[in-house]
Image 1 (cartoon, rainbow, N blue to C red):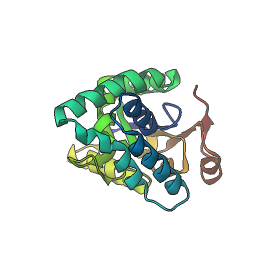
Image 2 (cartoon, one colour; image 1 turned 135 degrees about the vertical axis):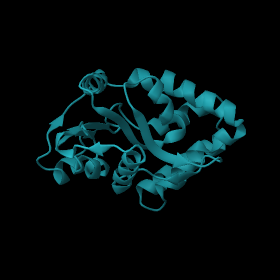
Image 3 (cartoon, one colour; image 1 turned 180 degrees about the vertical axis):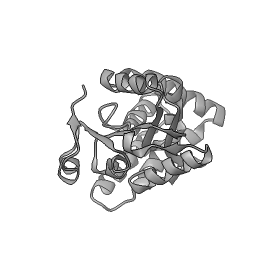
Amino acid sequence: MERVLAMFDFDGTMISGDSIARLVRRMSLDGLMSPLTLIRVLLSTLLWKLGLMRVTKVKSLSLSPLKRLSPEQADAYLAKFAADKLVPRIYPQALEHMQAHQRDGHVVLLVSASPLCYMKHLKEHLPVDDVIASETDSGYRVTRNTVRAVKNEAINRWLEERGIRADWKESSAYGDSANDLDMLGMVGKPCLVNPHRKALRLGKGIPSVRWR
């Protein structure tokens, strides 16, 4: 039996801005991230935007203060961050769409390039079947950045591992940037949410909405 999917990007689609930037700010305010590391993160972010550094290095550096905690402490810290700093910022329309898909019996997936180490905790608060996100090792270094075609690969792997066959024509996907167009191209019902100009240009013809 085929299943209808509903796949949601997170940063920029379900909340405004980047979740990892909120984590960096939280760790800095809590004294977990030193001022020197914060400066290094800001400089590396600039280098990434200039095309001089890989985004995986920036993400890994941003997560590096977590190594000061035990695995149990870090997991608890990230769970609290997700609950306190991300969940309250989710657009009501995003939650409503997730709930509607769930009521219709669809497989609802949160598919994000943000690190799984904190994104996984959103599963406790959202009507989703699972969370697919960028993988990290025990030292919080990003080992697989789930973006563009890698999202598609991760989704297909998730389905294959569970023996699920997707009804792509009836499935939906939501994203805000050009990085999400590969995922949106998988389904018959794509939707750009608060789209960037590049996404509108490259995704010409894809319906778009504004969530606030």
